Image (cartoon, chains in turn purple, blue):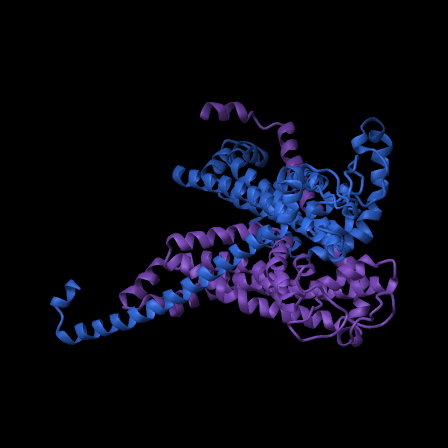
Length: 294
Length: 326
């Protein structure tokens, strides 16, 4: 190794320094290149969508039946997105946490099987999840529904919640775990009143990242909630969502009105998704800062 | 328990009570956890099986091999073959990897070797945010900005290189495999660079410092330590990116041009597995058409399980190896 190194690192020459500078330049260039789309997308959507979003009607009116007609808003899609994502969270969070705790506290064959399945799920295209729910729920029920959409979104969220919760719970400091045992706490008490509270901010971060992923999903909803043009709160009816509305309007983007509606909805969606995402990251970052100052 | 001999009786009674109460509590807790875990495992398993059952008429009619290798997709004649879409899936993913991998590796090196320590976290978050943009928003931007902007580039390549190599030849309608590959590249940079960054950050500090102490530059550190040691992890990141690219749906659907045929050129319109399902599903009224689309979904399912399984296997081997090496 040492003799190698002598050969490799010839005396510093201008050429070698230039090579190092070129490397630094290329790396910085790659970073800027990768961020161009982020800035371009955000800027483009903001510039084109802000005027829709500034009018209250956009939030409290439903879109016209004919997408090329003027006026109307995205109320049905906004409510549908919130309702389906909310229900999806109610399904995915308890199950996701249960699987994570089960994998750590109990273990064994079932835990390994479930964790394997979750790992598979984490890499599965969301459109395949949509097909699962279509083939089992929509076909059985005989119609598309917001409920089917919620289930699909729950399955999309599940791996994010489980993987992050398990990672956090595994990090429980050993002295604290031993302290809980030494106090004679039952395992369930130790988990619920010691381990989970310690990891809470990390667990919540996982949940928020899962929610932010589910809110932006379009593909699984095409086969499950389908979308419609009316306002409904009924979970058994087909239900509109913001991504679906953007998709359908974008496909009719020959009409300026449809295009504008897509821009406004896209800006709204980005704001919601980034909101969840950044709050989630901030929670963990804050904890890390607090930890380092202690 | 051995301690209780030295301690007077009352605590012993208490301990017994605690244990019994804890025991029922634990039993209930365990029962709830196992029910939920078993429940979700069964539900997911049933859903996968149901998908294969729904697709089975198509597999019975054309045979599994026949369906996968069939290059004709003609719903009005009830002929279904998946090959054009499998081809489109691999071609677009390959284009995405060719663009995204070098960029991601450079970003990972920037964030582990070059950037000031204070800037690393915020710069990393900026890259992560690329992954937070919903697919449909990328699609909207791709459709209205990227595709028109790339048409001149496509025409230029098709007019020069395309005269010699038909694979880069005309026609160039804008929406194409190439446009889909570019959008996919943007979407997989965060995952590839995040995994690569993690791998690079875990290379031994001593070796890096040794290179610097010997008078090596940052580039020498990357060339002699980070890249060689991180090779296996880098491979895992690339395979993971491939898995992600194969399954991306909506953004691809909006820029790939939607054609059931195999495009001769990289600039031809086409379809990937995911995008043909998304595009045709709601209008699938012909005989066996919905079943055939579900069958495409099962092909995509098997492909992504294989690819992601490979990525996990590589990563496990890598982390297992390095752990024992330390």
